[in-house]
Length: 441
Image (tube, rainbow, N blue to C red; front, side, top):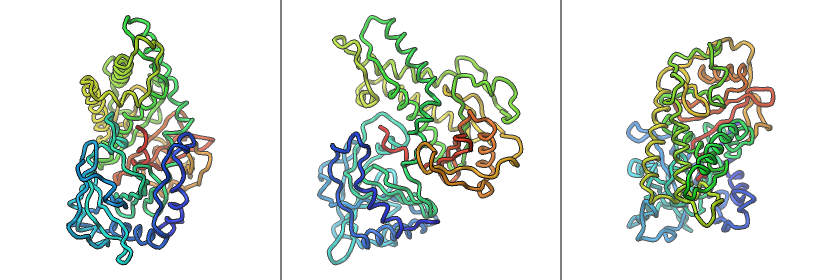
């Protein structure tokens, strides 16, 4: 069943007052109330209509925020604040006005500000320049992000594609009539945590050896730090790939040198395979350097067993070495994403790319359907026939059905992302959007 603006309102109202997690439920401020049902339906319907329009052959994309402009001080601006600019007189809120405004309001840097009027309905009061730091929560980065207030925010990202947010927190995404719930984010699952546990244990062991070998204070880290570091790199790779608009397939195996790739594999014909030498360890080397930099800079001689978190590392903006590592990690992401421009899959292990141009071969006759996950762990699923998917997706399903250890990520030309993995006796897929990655600092 397809979902459209009218059906979306009930879900938004249901999720609006839910805390981000039980852990911080008591500390969060009360959410600002939403407009009434009819007004909210009108707002979403207008944005849905504008998503179907084009402005001088360009698709319309924009961000919209429902807030009193007094929330933003007039003397602030990016990168740490928000610059709000008021129109001398409000503009009408309709799809035609939004379409005309969209070229001047860059999706990555600005939002259109609206507020309700007791007689005229919603009106456009001006523009909020946010800067681009908010994007690093999607694309990766270590700079401190300026947080939007917890008000209604809507992203128009393409035809029929709307993302509803409470500030920067995703409520839900409507994509071609289907809801993509951020609760079904496989990157937050226990099974994925377990899949790459061996690599994290290796890095933790290397760090403890380093701490024991030096005379100056070096802080401890936990797996959470390494998870965040791995996720930041993956965010960047997928983000660069999405922006290229050419589509891509990534096949990831846990471990350093997967047994499935040590010889000729009848399922993957890897055209460009890298030699297994020191250069291929570049990704792991950058992670080790990042861990050591953070643990050394935050070490305390009075607290030799001090444990630091990823948030602690984010605060190290004054360290020049951080900028060099940030650039190195970004270049690594650009490099891996660039490999996907060649026909075929990029094949990687936990430590980095092993090769590219991988052709998945074999028959699809034995596989007719996959499970579409409706939750993080893939326990609540809906079965779907694979005949409705393209060849890139179907080849990945076949591979995961044959090699249960493999995890695949497919980035479509339209920017949609799907992850596939053998789970609970069937190939299970998670439909993701880049906005689902927002919220991991």
